[in-house]
Every structure is written in C-alpha cells, then in structure tokens.
Image (tube, rainbow, N blue to C red):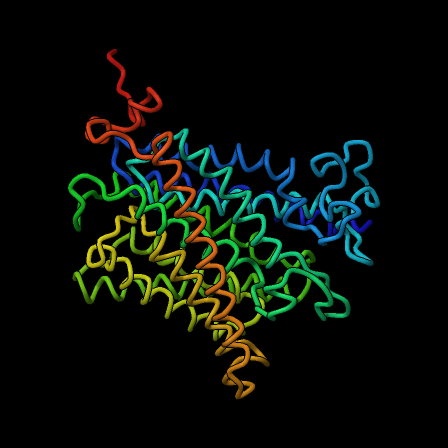
Amino acid sequence: MDQGQTAFILISAALVLLMTPALAFFYGGLVKTKSVVSMMMLSFGSLALIGVLWVLYGYAIAFSNGGTDTFYGIDGVFGIDTANIGLEGLLTVPDGATYPPLAFAAFQGGFAIITVALISGAIADRARFGAWMVFAGIWATIVYFPVANWVFNFTVVDGVIVDGGWLVYNIGVIDFAGGTAVHIAAGSAGLALAIVLGKRIGFAKGISKPHNVPLVLLGAGLLWFGWFGFNAGSELAADGIASQAFINTMAAPAAAVIGWLLVERIKDGKATSVGAASGAVAGLVAITPACAALTPLWAIVLGLVAGVLCALAIELKFKWGFDDSLDVVGIHLLGGIIGTLFIGFFASGVGLIFSGSFEQLGKQALGAGVVIVFSFVLSLIIGWIIEKTMGFRIKNEDELAGIDTVLHGEEGYARSEV
C-alpha cells in the first residue's frame, strides 16, 4: 500500500466533503434573513441522508460492473463488508492500485453529497424540509447514482480506458471531475424543481438581496478551496495530471471572476462582491470536466467565457418566467455545459482546433444532452409526485412569515432580550 497516495486521496476526500458546508454558507448568505436556517439545513440534510445512502447502496450502484456475481462496489450486504475492509477486502480496486478502495469510496461519497445539495439553491425560500429530504433520497437513487456509474466507473490500463460506464467508455465523453454527473445533472434537476414549486411571492428582478455578503464570500472561498480536492483529487495520485488540474482550478475561476465583473461593470456600472463570488463558482463549474484536458492558457479562456456567459444568463429567468432562486441553472447547468463543450473545441490533442475533427465535440454534446434529459425528466416527475402527495412548497402565509421559524423553530439572528 502506498501511504502517500492513500493520504492524497483521503485529504482530497476531506476537501470535497468540506464543500457542502461551504455551499451552505454560500447559499445561506444569498437568501433573506428569515430563510438562512432553512437554506443551510437543505445542505446539511443532504450531507446526512446521502452520506448514509452512499454507504448502504449508492457506491454499489455507481460502481457496479453490471455482473451477476456481486456488487462492483463496497462488497457485502447493501454493499459493505464490515469484516474485511483492507486493501483486498473490496472489489473496486483497479489492477495495480496501491490505495485502499475505501479511500476511493470516501472520495466519491463527497461528490454524491455535494451534487444533491447544489439542487437546493433553485428552490430557496419556499421548500419544505421533509419533502426535500424525500426528493433528495429518491433523486440520488435513481438519477445521481446511475449517472455517476456512466461517468466515473471506468478502468484505465496504460493510460487507456478499457472498460466502464457507457458515457465515458462507449461514447467517449471526456469528463475528468464531473461536469456532467455533478453540475449538469444538478442544474437540470434545479430547473425541474423551480418549475414544479413555482415562483416566490412577488417574483421579479430585485425580489430579494443577499442578506449577508460576507457569508457569501466565505462560502465561495471555502468552495474554491475544497474544489482543489474535487478536481486534482480526481486523478487519485499526486502526479503531473493532478498538478495540471490544480493549476487550472486556480486559473479558470480567477478569469471567470474578471469576466463576471466586467459584465456587471458594463451593464450596471458597479462590480459587486457577490458577482465576484458567483463568477468564481461559475469558473469552477466550467473547469471541472476540463481541468485535465486543457493547458492553463486555455483554462483562462474558458474561465473568461464562463464568467461572461453565466453573468448574462442569470437574467434569463425573469424573461422566461422560472424562479431559480440562487441561479443554479444559470451557473451550474450552463457552466457545466460550457465546460463540457469547450473540451470538444480546445482539449489538447482531440479538440477541434488540434485535430480538425468535430468528433470529440459531438461526443461532448451527446453526453451533455443525455444527462440533461435524463435528470430533468426524472426530477420533474419526482418533484411533481411529491408536490401532489405530501406537498413540496410551503404555504404562502408561511413564506411571508418566515420559513425558518415555521419549519425549524429557529432564527438565524435571534436577539437576546437581556
């Protein structure tokens, strides 16, 4: 066992797990004062529920080899073997790997958690916590775990993918760290839920301003910090490819901040701190699938493009009439699409400008399209059923009174009488 490689994977797993509380800060600061507890609880609820489901069966689904002998996941009842968890005790270790498979399971578990949590931003200020937890469990089971299998479950021999999930192996999509499985899937689900739950009371441009800008910046900074584990950690080794992913994860969001702020300055006359935070996240989303496929200069270009386009796209919800509260669609869905398609143009060796062929671009577009349709349709169905049965949206009077006290009996900023 290589202790250095194992440590690298475990540290990366911890960084990825940190991203969910970071997202809670980011989302929590963006909503109004009376919704901050509820908003942050949607992230922490995801962490709790999906963390359990991942161990029980999620990993087994995501890394199944399709055989009839056993799970290609955490071996045993519901996927886990508590009696034998050493290097040879699990079935997911690739040939020649020198790290415990449970380290990889922990790493991928963080991906599952943050993906579900991302969706919650689209339904801020109006979702029931219990209904959200039901949706999160069902969505992870029938949408995320299978899509993760399509994208992350593959075997590499001498740098060549020889087996695995059909999006990466059969179709040939390049997605190093989850632009499709994480961001496109979550963004599509967010759009579906925004449609199901409908608009907030008084929905219009400027309906609410972030109640705590420092909290937004703190969340964005911690997300960026954790994203180094998300992207570079996907190499599963501290090597040159991880280094390439790391530098691109620094460069692209930095450029995206500049792109977003330029749009704000031209459109509104002021560059805002919330815009800087949003631009950073847009750049991080876009570079996720491409972080090991681009040179740093092309990563900067991608960041600029993502920052500009995502800053423009968040206004479309007012024109098209869907209430995506915290711009999950404009940042994660569009950012994921931009990063995925950018690979088809500029990926080293296989992109259009290097190969002269549209083949890789076609593969990237097909992969993105499949995940969009799969996630959107199933999310729409799941959300609609929950709304019609147990109810997904809170009452209008509760929304006006304050969702935190109604659902959780707490206030984000309770004042002492003393």
